[in-house]
Amino acid sequence: MRKYIIIFISISIIQCNMNSKSLDNLKFHLKKNTITDSQPLLNNGIWSSLPISSKCAEDIQGLPNDLSGIKYISIQISHAPDSFIVGLRGINNVGDKIYYFDRNNDEDFSKELPYSFPNKDSIETLTIPAQYDELIGGKVYPRDILIELYKDNDKVDYHLKNYWECKAILNDDTLRFAIVRYPPINSFMFIDTDHDLIYDKYFNIQSERLTLAGNFYTVQIDLPSEEVTFLKTGQQPVDAGYSAPIFSGRIYNSDRIFDLSKEKGKITILFFSYVDCHGTADLMPSLIKISNNFSNNPNINFISIASDSSEVLKYNNRFDFPFQSIIDKNIWSDYGVISTPSIFIIDKNGVIQQRGMGKSSTAFISKIESLL
Image (cartoon, rainbow, N blue to C red; front, top):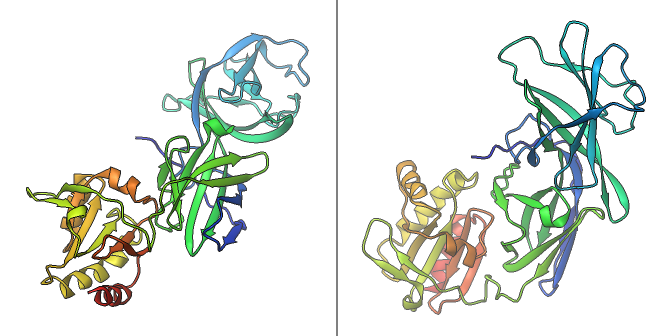
């Protein structure tokens, strides 16, 4: 399982307010930030592992004079083929292996600090912050990196430390996301799905679609300009006023098949969330109240779409969960669910009447009553 690391530094995030659903392209400004090790999210930046290539040191400015057998170290950044981190490795007068790295990429080692492994068996890696220069579109961009050297092994791991984040707002829908790695073919997006300031979902820019205000978008990233553009697809929106995507699935722990196409004449309440989602615990009392108010009405379906069976078991163990559950991650994709909890009210004609993030029980009950 991958580890994630992120810190939220006190910055001014650009909020981009756009109010028209008719726009085909949505462009938002990204704010560059730096990952540190104090909070467990966001994939260590992006991790890579490479061997160290060495050659005899020649014409190096600031060459240490207290080392013997000096070798020149070259670490190539795998996703940026023209970018390198350079360093020195030598032996001091007591036989310890000493490392120097050109951490600010100025080709001068005179002010660089020496690094060595402590004489402890438990210390297996050295961690060194550094920079490399990345060439994009004819311009040079400094990038932060964390180097990890292995003890007794000519191998290096490195972690990219820069990320770009934005809060995109459209028609009261909010999507907070962070982007790491570059150029665009290697970009990765992380999303704060439940608005708790923690990026908890990885989004594949190459194969997945984003939803904002019910519309489906593909993503284009321009890190030199620090912009991200959502390109509207031709897929029908999943929003109020549009037909709900048809689906069918077996009700968990039963033989019953729920088929939305056969539920005309009934209201269906669809619920998407994770048990550990920040907003689920707050919303659950409202959902239970709604279900209890309408539990004897055969014309209302309460359906939860779960990502896997473990989520259903956790719901049942943690709450008096009133919804019938279907396990099918594809339905999440069909409804464009990324942020959670998400709730849809589908009327008797199969049209979405309300789509939202954790509305109050009063608002939902009033809407259901108006549809009966």
